[in-house]
Image (cartoon, rainbow, N blue to C red; front, side, top):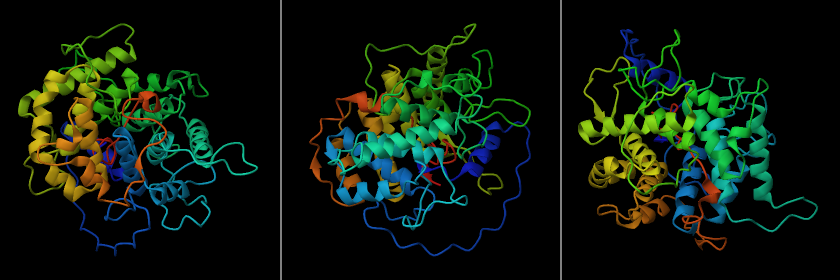
Length: 420
C-alpha cells in the first residue's frame, strides 16, 4: 500500500522489471524534467504534498485509519473526497477542479476508486436528500461498486486503469473494497465467469519455485514469468484470506508453511504468501526497496511502507511472532519517514500497529493518531455510528492497502508511498 501510492502504472511495470532482475538490462535513466509548480491545496485535503497522483489515495487511507480508532473525519474532508467522484461512480487519482464534469480524458483509477469506496463505507451517513433514494454517502459508494464491476477484466481481475492488464495489487484492493460494503468478492464474476480469486491465483508463485516460493507477482513479464513482489504478496495475502486492512492480531499463533495443492486454493495461496513474507523479514528485520533502473547508487534502502504492509498481512494470517521484530523496527525507524511522507504513511503505520494488537497512540515515542490528524482538518470527534475499530464488518477485506503500493503496490500497497 505503501505510502506514496505507487506513482502510476508505469512505475508498477518498472517495479516488476526491477524485482525480476532476471538478466534484463536496466534502461538508461532519462533526464529529470523540471519540477512543475505545486498546485494550491484544496480545503479539506490531508497532506501538504502535490496531490496529483495520490490525493484520493491519501485522503481515503487517512479516513480508514481514523475510523479504526473511533474518530470521525472532518466534514470538509469528507465533502472533498465525495466531490472527487465522477458521475460514473469512478474516481481519478486527483481532480483539481471537481466542478468540471469528467470526460474521456479523465484518467480514471481503479485503485483510487476502490480505496475511496472503503473509506466511504465507514463514513458517518448524512441525512437523505429530499427526492433521493438514500443518503449521499450511500449513493456514492454504491455507484463506485457498480463502476468497478463494470470494468472487471475477463480474467476476473483489475488493472490500475480500466482496461489495462490485471495486476495483483489492483485486484486485491478491489476485493477489499467489495468486502467492505458487504459484497462477496467470490460472487463477482467477469463475462467469462472468472472471479477476482481466479485472477489472484494467476499471480501466485508455486512453493516449488525456489526464486520466490509462495510469493505473488505484481504481473507476469512479457514471457509470462512470475517474479516475487513483496508488496503484491502482502496485498494478495490479505485479499486471499478474505480479511480487511484492519484485520490482525489473530490467535493462536500459526507456523509459516508453504504448500502446493492441486488444484490450488486462494486461501492456501494466501498462507503461502505469508510464509514468503515471514522468510523475507527474517533476513534483515525489514524489507528493502530495489534500486530504480539506471540509479547510480544500487545500495538497498529500507522500504518502510512495504514493511508495514507485510506486518499487516502477517498479523492477519496469525503469524504475529514472525512480524514482531519488523513492528519493533518500524517503531524505532518509521516515524521520521512518515513525517516526511505524509498522511498515507501514518495510516499504514496505524494499520500495522493494530494488526499486531499494539497501541497506535504509543508507537515508539510517537502518537500516530495525533500525527495523522495534524496533517489535515481537525476531526469531528468520536464517531457516532459505532466503533469501526471493533466492527470490522465495515472492512471485511482489504487491500490495501493495498491494497495499496504506488505503482501498484510495491511501491506501496500501490503507489505506496503512494506518492506516486
